[in-house]
Image (tube, rainbow, N blue to C red):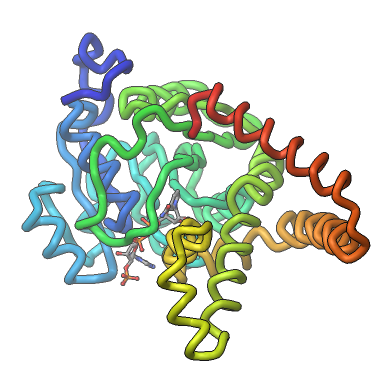
Length: 304
Ligand code: NAP
């Protein structure tokens, strides 16, 4: 079924003939499912370094072909989607460069966008069009079993085309995400990385910290942490269960923006710490009132 609210019902023409997805994990397999189920591509194939992931993708019927051989997957592809962790992009870029034919569109789903330009861009031959992308959608699960076609429905997808990017290629990648159910926003890669540092990367770092702190507690306290987790802790554990490799790569590849936002966060935390120490209730209440309004804004924007 096409996603509600998308125009996939009326847009029946196939956008791509053969799409090769490199990395058939949560995001790669979700996109593969959407491309097939919503009639966006004629044939979807994948390459993954994990033979198990390939076997699983075939068994689940997510792709028509699955292989650990990049050349076999990329042969004849008019769209290549890189869906491996950001830290693998330089090696993947180097490996796919010589395999790409003129006119191929290359996109990615990486959570950091300057890294795509830096690590993939230099390896692409002339006439191959790079349109970096980031679907702002996901779960804490990994692997091909975790994916589902409607993952991108009602979510943002940010594209960060470099200056001078091919207009036609940009239109096709935009249309692909639109038909997968997303609203597309075009942004400069540097701006993307700064925005995501506060909206996604810092929250993950905080969750990893809180859950790490709890796991270091004494054994008796630890059991009560689990028992009474509904008090707020549980929400952090979901985020802190996100893929360790993916998040390692996000922090290593968005270092400057994350460190800058972390500095500001630390200052604000110290201010709250001070307010608690000195019993400044009014300051605490003002702060919590301000943050409550942000939550209401998110609900109004239907992003809750
Ligand atoms: P995932 O479920 O862990 O899947 C990644 C897949 O790529 C795995 O099968 C992995 O194999 C494979 N892989 C790793 N290195 C490779 C290489 N060099 N060549 C070929 N295959 C390789 O990851 P994911 O959550 O889908 O994330 C994929 C990308 O989407 C990342 O760049 C991430 O930043 C981005 N993203 C993720 C989310 C999210 O919430 N998860 C949201 C938006 C964007 P192994 O198992 O052998 O490592």
